[in-house]
Length: 70
Image 1 (tube, rainbow, N blue to C red):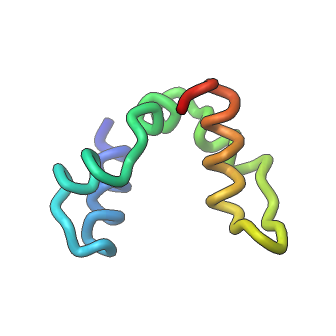
Image 2 (image 1 turned 90 degrees about the vertical axis):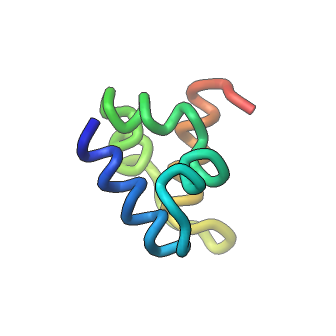
Image 3 (image 1 turned 180 degrees about the horizontal axis):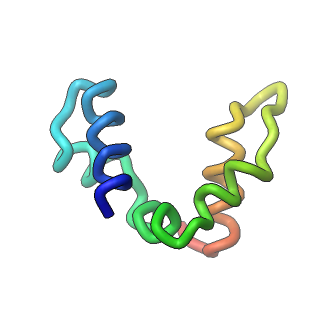
């Protein structure tokens, strides 16, 4: 759980927000579970940058599609 919060803290700092604002406004709820169970890493590993999307965007799409969330 500590590594996940460190990642959220890093994102919050970069966005100029608090951890709570970042988690509530920017982080999809399934990402904490995905981070902890390793599926976020797998989505990132299998994603490739395309002309229109970054690797992070493709990984996020892969993860959310696999979890069938909206």
